[in-house]
Amino acid sequence: MTVLKTRFAPSPTGRMHLGNARTALFSALLARREDGHFVLRIEDTDAARSSVLHAEGVLEDLHWLGLSWDEGPFYQSRRQDFYAAHFAALQSQARLYPCFCTPEALAEQRRAQLAAGRPPRYDGRCAPLAPDETARRLAAGEAAALRFRVPVGQMIAFEDLIRGPQRFDSGDIGDFVVRRTDGTPAFFFSNAVDDADMGITHVLRGEDHLSNTPRQLLLLEALDLPAPRYGHLPLITGHDGAPLSKRNGSQSVAELRAAGFSPLALLNYLARLGHHLEAPGLLPPEALAAAFDLAAIGRAPARFDPVQLLHYQKLAVAALSVEDFLAFAGLDASRVPGAARGDFVRAVAPNVSFPAEARDWADRLFSGQPVIGGDPPAALREAGAAFFEMAARLFDVHGTDAKAWTAALREQSGRSGKALFIPLRLALTGLEHGPELRDLLALMPAPIVSGRLAAASRLAATDTLS
View (spheres, rainbow, N blue to C red):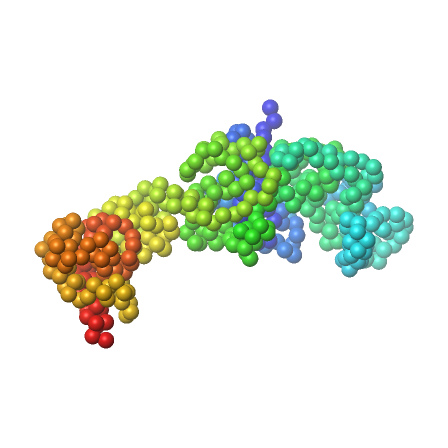
């Protein structure tokens, strides 16, 4: 039986964006679901735009996401002899010809066609050049690309895995470049012959590649090579309906990682972006693979929703064990005392989405640093210095028994509800909201509690005097 093989084949011209990441994920999930192979190929033949650092970034991002590959990484820049053999095979069939058109001439062709209301395509002006004329110009050192002669009057049809039946008239395509003027293979060529050579059976890629598919099918047919099945994924858009970009909220995978997102959260969100999953909640990678279904991929653009991504981030953080949470937050024993680690995580985790938030809570609970600046909040000023002096005296009696302490304070101060608890929260943490006060009080060292209450009393007294 033929092993199902998918691939992820990015060009290393920048950091991986969410569209790339979703394509990689869907390709990996399809392979995992069918016990197939997931192949990684770096398409770095465009030397002017490709970067070794960006290629390394692709591997780094995939490792972080947990998308391991079974074969590769293969680098197209190291396969020039392989491409040369296939160029020679096409030249022996007279399927290729040199094209001497400059970028300026091609741009002028395009402008004229658009002005006339025609779809832009190469007009074939170099196709009829006589062999001796071609040889003379090449001998003179004139730069030339190689174009593939598209057959006339042929209908190219295929069944898209997502979009169903597709038909293209060869007359609408135009002869296309397969080798650049610098001798490197163009995308249409290297992408197609590599898929055949590597045994790729299923290609998932963005819908912007849909018009490339008939060109690649023509190439594979001419070379008598097997063609994979193609599926073209819907576009990802931003909040404004435009293609997702920096302008409308897009971030690279590296930026999301730096911001503290969990890879499992991103995987769960991307698995549902344009793909319907019945199973709710946070799913491990193996469950995502089992639930993946090509038939559940929509054809309409999928809108990126940062609120939904944050929802899965909260689920991922809530699912962490004590040790994993502390590692996620970068908190060691110098920031959270060993005896308090478990209680700290249980208290603050429901209020935390990112590592910086957890570190902030650790500082608020265990650091001797002030938590209120020079301008006291209104609720603290309104409570007054006497309230915090009373709170400090009663804390000396009841200690970390929050229930007894707040009950006594309620009775002696006459305050209750928000009028009682918000000034206390402000004094102890600098914030009006957060984890349960009783949980925080149980964690905080007594000297820090006493010091914070004394500081609140001084600030309230200073504000009253001013």
